[in-house]
Image (cartoon, rainbow, N blue to C red; front, side, top):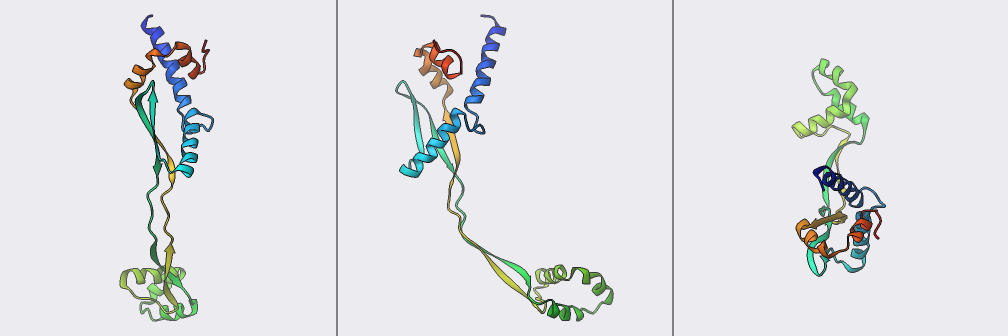
Length: 170
C-alpha cells in the first residue's frame, strides 16, 4: 500500500470517526452515550464509567457538572416616587447641570447614589435575591488512550471495525 492509499484510508476513517463522535449531532453514537450516561446518573448517581476492550481499561467517560451557585443578594437603585425625585433634583444648585441632567434624571440619581452614597428623595435601594442554583449535568468528558485501544482491537476482525465506520462488516 502506497502513501496516497494510506492517506485516503486515514482520511476516510477520520471523517467517519468525526461523525460517530460528534457531540452536536443528536443521532451520533457519542450523543447516544451521553444521553445514556445522563439517564443512568438520574437513577444510579454513577457519574463515570470505565471503558474496557478485551478486558483491558482503555478509557473513561464521565459526566461534567456546572459549578454550584450560592444564593446571593444584589442591591439595585429604584425610583419609588418621581415627584419626590424631582423635588430633590430642584435642590441641585447649578442650573445648567439641572437642565442637562433633567432628561436623564433616574440615571443621574443612581449615579449620585453610587458615587456619593446619596439617595435622592423618592428613591430607595432594593435588594434582589438570586436563588442558589444547584450543580447540574452539562455534558460528558471522554478520555481514551488511543494506543491502548489500538492494541486491544488488533484481535478484532476487520469487518467489525468497518461496520463501526459505516462500511460493510463482512
